[in-house]
Length: 253
Length: 253
DNA sequence: CGTCTGTTTGATAGCGCTCAAAGGGGGTGG
DNA sequence: CCACCCCCTTTGAGCGCTATCAAACAGACG
Figure: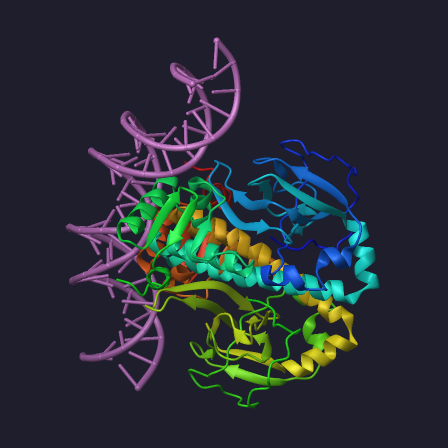
């Protein structure tokens, strides 16, 4: 969920044009995400600014790149959903963000991808080689400005997530997540009271710093309190968004 | 710890030239931090790029601005240390970053500061008005590039902190913190085995998502295991940095 | 010398994790 | 078309880490 280090010239890694990338595709980068609101209408949209690119298609659960892989590509999502994450050596995972249509990924530091990226659903992406990006940036200052906007937005979200991970209870985290998903749906012109959750419980858990079981139990508790109801495990109706908002901000009790 | 939204024109708030700002100075912004390594030698340092400014001095524990305050200023630290944080309505605090000499602060979103900022020690800062920044940016693309670099670096750090807050144990968090402080000292050409910790235990706790007591207990445990020793509560000698590193990354057990 | 703030230490409790197993839905093969 | 399997979700039981509550300790300052 971040921006490539365009000011660093990275030795070009073997350029590949695979349409389907293998499971542990050894190339890494993190993610730059567009402000979702902007994706739809912004004429400054990066995919417009950047122009031509090759295309990559990932099936669900396929890895785009891993943390630490040499990174020299930037991707923007044409369709689908990606998660970016970091792991401890013993396998604990922290998902640092979800990326959707129009979002950009490829956060690089010291020539390496900062996070791993994996498809949540079947996803197609535009792929940009770093030298190309640099050339384009030199020719059009609007691109750099846009990258700064995106990166700043990412950072704002990260600050909020740090508050959640460091200080919120399980109930507060799950309520915050539901509301974030609702906002995301609304920003895309979809229903924000009956939302579809693409990710599994354990992905939600790894995003919120909780376990699968705690996520599930918390959702059940919300259901029993009449705050939400399930159409199915991945279709949730927010019956009382105001109450959820109070919980999310620790104003319930 | 972030960058001002320079692409948004914010209505200029009453400009003040106080040399000493009052406790709850109603103006807000977050923080842009320089990569510490760069601060010393980088000719592209923002304080050089930005040129003239007014100066502000804060005594220890004074607030520079609060989250949500209308923000139209950027600060760079001339000397001292600042912490930036977010709070829940009921008073739980999450510190999202520490800023030192050469670092920049003033992360603004929607015209408001994203975090609160408070001095840890007596601190003097350079203050830049937003319209000035925008004018300068238009005249020199290097500034925008530098801002992007700084913001990207902030985001990389935030990702790492999310892993810590979401998935690491208390021991791992404290060990990570000690090593980060050691790196910070080394980057500034200071001793990295006998480090001075400016912040109190409860500030460390609020940075690591722990309580004062847990921080204290964990440090005591490290001392008893021969990993560290105290000159005094704020001067710590790292006797076994390699072991600390293993602990920080969950490779101990 | 007393007060105040910050640190350490102690005792206890609770939230969320771990381990375990039982549902439930969709896909595949017989 | 049904049966089986697999994966995901839910539910249950018990424990451990860290928070909470409380008090002693230590250094700084007036």
